[in-house]
Image (tube, rainbow, N blue to C red; front, side):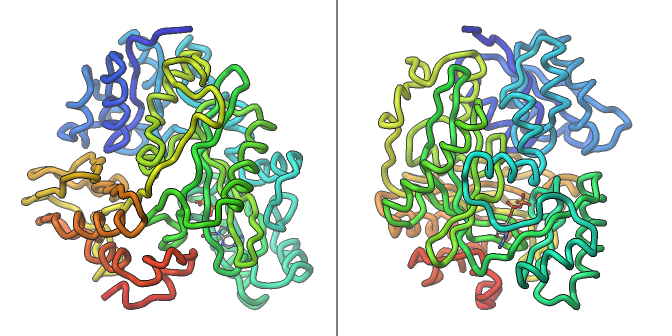
Length: 457
Ligand code: ADP
């Protein structure tokens, strides 16, 4: 077993702070990196040491610069790098550069990043593991192949960027007449966002639920699930509110979670990862993708299981088996869940203005608090500057209650307590979601936001 004494956190904002906290509790020192633009950002002050990187490179590019990050890690004698989510978290190049430099990458093996970084190859692995996938093309298609495939399988279909993520590079097509334009848009968006124009086609499932399973595997071949999350509440295919566990029958939960374990065992997966499924109205579920990293919404799984996922990632990377005292999961039966947790992503977006990101100085910031409320934020404080270069996540609010209704009441109360001035936020919109009868019935599917205009008022 290795014992890390110092970890470089290759990220910014709330997740960088989340990782620093996990390290500090474990007695591991932390190194932050920050850009010129981020020199006043809180994450740099939450680490034991902080270094500016990427001078003249640009605010985002600097966080993607593998060579400089490795250079800082070597210079500061770090044992490991935690990439968080976004930026380099799924970068095979970073994982391999770490290997060459003798630094541990806190995440899966490079081959898993390769396997799951591309949705077409992920589907192949799922099919090999005998997991149901959404009917789709075998690989990237050109416009003619897309047309043939859609005619065979029937409209509606969804076009997806092979290397896509974050809801970008996706287009739903209802009729053949819309196909050509949608194809061109999807592939140019794919090229612009992911540097590869490859697009494939899937059958568009009518108003499914998005159910995902949290997985944790060690380097000794042990692998468990930490139950599931319902992430159906989405805007433009991006998650807005997440729930753990999903409000589904125990037998279905068992089937979905064991299917996820089957896939990840087949892949020999190591560390934390998430298997995403669409659950159709008829109860059938289909694999869509694997996210080989910690996710934004890991917090709610932590609340219902009591397992610190980031610390587990670190221990697994040090070589501890899941059953060791450090992690404490000898078998699946050691993972328990209790109660319900809901997470809202509070963003600096203006719901009255098409969710346009707002930027500027926060002049008042008074948070919610109290029993059952967890807050994860990067720049949620009076005087903070919300920068235009980075994503608009301001604070993740997670609420825990023994029943779903109690968790929802707590979330409603927490949202009401916030006072944020100087930048617009989506809190009024989130509050409408939490009070909505369809939300409270647990019946939301991915079309919930689109089908309820009253949420925007
Ligand atoms: P990304 O990696 O960009 O997040 P995903 O493949 O995870 O993309 O899909 C994101 C969301 O898009 C899903 O949760 C779902 O709402 C919608 N979606 C994706 N594929 C389909 C499909 N085949 N049918 C219906 N909706 C889909």
